[in-house]
Amino acid sequence: MAKYKLLLPSMGESVSEATIVNWVKQPGDMVEVDDTIVEIATDKVDSEVPSPVAGKLVEQRFDKDAVVQVGEVLAVLEVEAQNMTEADLTDVTAATIENVDLPLEDHQIPGVDRLEEHKFSSNHEENDSSEGTGRFYSPLVKSIAAEEGISADQLETIQGTGLEGRVTKQDLMDYLADRGAGKEMKPKGIVERVSEQPVTVVSGKDEIIEMDRMRRLIAEHMVHSVQIAPHVCSFVEADVTNIVRWRNNIKDDFQKRENEKLTFTPIFIEAVVKALKDFPMVNVSVKGTQIIKKHDINIGMATALPNGNLIVPVIKNAKQLSLIGLTKAVNDLANRARKNQLKPDDTQGGTFTVTNIGSFGNVMGTPIINQPQVAILAVGTITKKPAVIETPSGDMIGIRHMMFLSLSYDHRVVDGALGGMFVRRVADYLENWEIDREV
Image (cartoon, rainbow, N blue to C red; front, side, top):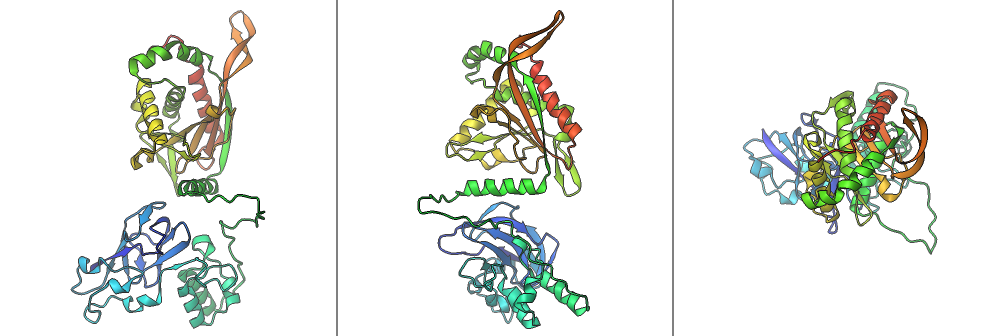
């Protein structure tokens, strides 16, 4: 067996990278010639990378949503090839047979002789694969359809399982198998593309602004979260008067002693960490039908950037940090985020997210869950309000500092009782703050 390295092929002079959208084949899967290995997206097109060889997929070099540079190895396959070393196969790509300087008659790889027939395909407008219907068909699908006598109208009835409802080679093979077995072929209709939008009329005075890469990634991440997780929200109002007074009393001395500014964010995060210890089933993620209970508590803190985008750096092992440690971590991550100095690891591994919408004067909100987490807490602005104060001698009205907590959670695994008790526990920790606490 020899190793074949599938590289990300060139997609034009102005395109230097692509984002992994979906791995169609998984390690251990057998791959035939022309089978789609991975679906990718660039700034301009969504595309499929087919395999020019037959073999077994043994390695994926990148995870879903990773950004890959042109020429980097996407995947590694085991192929049947006598006397062929890994180095011999290094420069073979799915798009450029001219890079291979091997005598094919002596070292034939199954399917390589057909390589030039199957150029890298995309939904770019120059690729005439939609037959004027607006639905994308790869050259391979069109070729098989032509050979099997499948008309364009028949293609329209096949429900695709590929990216955005595209018809894959397997979809076509299943269709032919059903037809050969004499099964009644009922029109399934075209699957509606997720990316399709209602027609927008643009006047001459409107300004068209192209999303930058980060905004596109945020948009994709948010849509994915809403599609995969049924969101439920619970709200609690907390009396944080003690916290406000305590912070006002010590913040100047704290800054002189620790050389750090004490904000409300680390205080909120400390309460969240305590509540997650009490309700560990909120500190989970979902993988298929499995619930993964996290050992570490890694708190993501949504941070607004100067350009208007949003990033979520992560405080690792937050349950092991004191309030001083949380303050330093919050300030460090926030400062580096705004200076664009975060490292890739700084935004990975979060198990729960906190977003401070109160910094924008918002009272409450319904934040979208940061996948693969199952909950996110929004803290609203702290507002002075008249409130009922219970005392041993009776109830009275007083001016209190009040704040809403908004918890969005994934109803697949977090029921209303658990979500409601969790956000209430966060509020309890905030309300029971010791006014004479020392740090």
